[in-house]
Length: 309
Image 1 (spheres, helix red, strand yellow):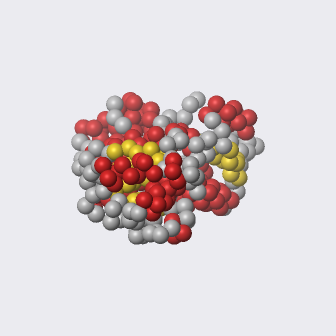
Image 2 (tube, helix red, strand yellow):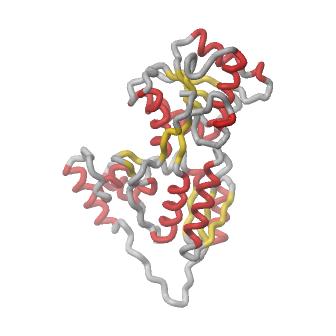
């Protein structure tokens, strides 16, 4: 029998998975009506969610393997921290982490062959798991990728910037990047910023290929700050600014994303978003072992304040 999921409850109640998570976890400071809460709880009871623990006969041994698919669109170096923390946490439960980098079809095939205890599929992040209960919540906000993108733009808004550019690599972004671009547009609207200007920055080593977009931002637009898709793009922007004789943050504030530990090698040092991927790794491992979750007591990401923004 297929295991009942939080999405099943959401569909039955006619609400989002985030709403289900808030109601079933009694998240404080919510404005969900009593009628909606009753509907969610009734749907959960009818479907038997959360599912009861299944006791296996003593001769049946559950698989010790947890399968982590990082997908083919990995962004940044923080994924390494997530993997290491998952490994450490799973070892404490006598489980083994198997890491693959595959598209969805290949990952499903391996899942059938390995029969793992649990599967964590990061390739689904941009689509299927954007508001799922697995992320938990922090101060009433789901702690998924939209949280970190909003934090990046909020930092700029708090420093008085209203016209912001989102810098993305001209060579393409992949599914993670596309999802973050959509998150950024929503966050800008929510924060009362002007509609974001999306600027494509070439990552070509030849600086001549990278200059025009940055020159246009400074000289021909109202943009006063750049939020970059990742730290590599942010450092490319700073490099071009230096070449053109511009200064950060005086001419253009620049903030990165991911804290890849190269930021201090540039002058000015790059302000960026640091995601607590170690905490996410521990959370994913514990979910794989016993499917219990708690909301966050510390922020899942923070601003690393340096000189560029």
